[in-house]
Image 1 (cartoon, rainbow, N blue to C red):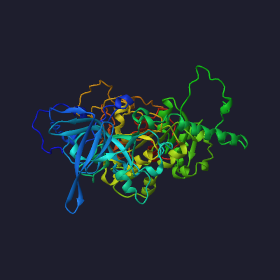
Image 2 (image 1 turned 60 degrees about the vertical axis):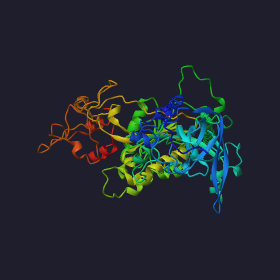
Image 3 (image 1 turned 90 degrees about the vertical axis):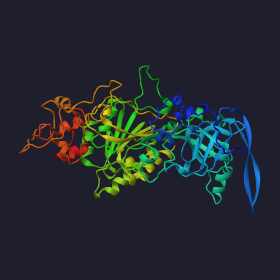
Image 4 (image 1 turned 180 degrees about the horizontal axis):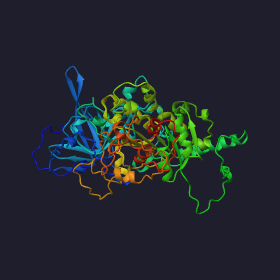
Length: 585
């Protein structure tokens, strides 16, 4: 058996690559979060020394003592080989780490190191999905890839396991695996299957892991940014690879084509905007002009007045519809997107019954959708229960159904950062992410400040980007502006343009702009703003102190507030009250 004594010999740098948690991620064009996903990194502990006389071997037999009961013991041989998988015992401390693992982990062996004193296995580290902080479904036998490289003494190896890496989304990998031989079927003896059955890895994650205290917020436990994504084809085992790209969208195209055929036999839907171009049948598509470029479609849920659609339009998307349950917002949306569908509907009801809005599949599906679920319930400043709390809470649970109905290629979403940083919302955050994961979407999240992207108004939000199977998971764009008042004492090393100031924004609003009426106060008020600084406050529905102009003589006009939120000067709002327009922003 291997000795438990730690040798005093000089170390060789065999674990240096542990410093980069996902070292192969560059091959998939992904930018990793700043947080490393092992507990010891956050404490800055040095890696343990390994013996200096280690040799690399392809296989190794070790012997583990097993209890036979009645004070009898026997030694069991465990044959280790490169490419195999081993299960680690609970309480294992990985080389370079300082905290024992609180549950069993698994290593796909890429290297075996041995000397007279000790033996080690090196390889990718995996964790059970049911121990994945609620981000994954608790499917028996499912594991996720949590770390690119880990090193562990073989004394912590419990048993040999069969592990398959696949990018198949179906449990049996398209029929390659019999269900009765997989640990993924939850039956009466499913836990026995977890101990000896086949393990399947379909996903890779970048999370803080093995936190000392799991009672905190989601940010405290798994970090303020991260991702869970499906394995890419090249990462899967060769026998279990699938070319997924195109399958997702082809199923959607078939549904659209079938519905178009049915619509031709019925009356024309006169509620749809007039179209100047006819859509040919799939089998009779004409040859496209070399200059023709496909325009991606965009659907906006919880659209408000249409701020997200405005950005999507500037980016070149074709806006197909916006949906909201508030009449004022829907009216504003319709005024600005006259060729799109402005739909007044409850999002939950729409997801349950899309036909309720008389929108055919050809207009229902969108390449990209955006979700701006109500944020009041999760806001850090929401300390008193509100009458709409339950409705706003349920709204964030509609993602699962929307993905099934719309089947978008890419989803973007924003929510107040409170859902990620508040302890009581830890499970809510996990449920939000799980809705993407369970639908086999890859998902990335991070808390971002709008002032880093050219906006003058501070708006700290949890941003989520997700992509369907076969579509690469987009990175977050690099910051485009620098806010010296948010990043104190931090140099502008990238030499980015500074965030626009209040004075610059006010100067851009022409005197004759709509919704730009001055209403002086009877008496001057104190203002928290300065003309030479950005608008470093979030605009709330009631305005509050965020309404007072720097001169203290008047509140900001509605147009000025809208411009702080990056709405164009000519953007139209349906006017019922000042409060209504502020809320629409």
